[in-house]
Length: 126
Image (cartoon, rainbow, N blue to C red; front, side, top):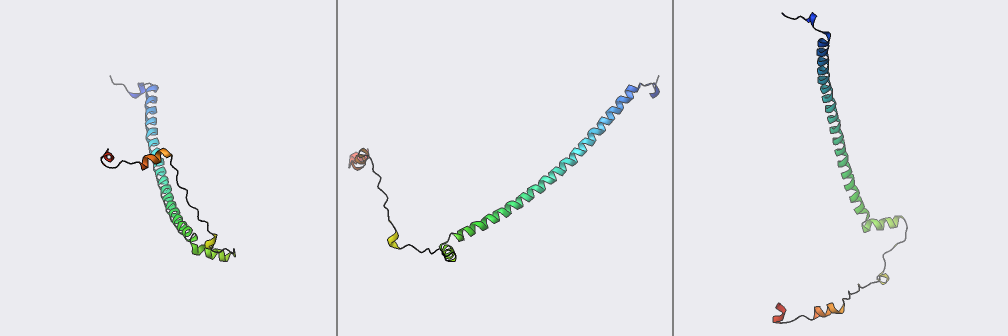
C-alpha cells in the first residue's frame, strides 16, 4: 500500500523545508563571503601599490636631500653663506692653531720588562 503525501505528518514536510532553507543559506553565505573576500583582496592590493609608490617617492626624496646636505657641507658653500650673512668669519692663521700631542700609553713595569727581555738564540724558539 503506497502512502501519499496527504497522509504524511506536517512535521516531516516542515523538516524538509528547514533543510532546504539552511542549505540555501549556506550556499548564499559562501557566495557573499567569497565576494567580500575578493573585494578585500583587491583593496589590500591597491593599498600595497600605493605604499610602494610612496616608498619610491620617499627614497628619491631621501637621496635628493642627501646630495643637498653634501653640497651644504662643502667649504665653498659655507664660505658663500658666511659672506651672504656678513658674519665676518675668516680662516684661522697658523699661529692660532694649538697642536696637542697624544700622550703615550704607560704600561706597568712588569709588562715592559717582559716585552724588552726577549730571549735570543735557541731559547727564542720555545
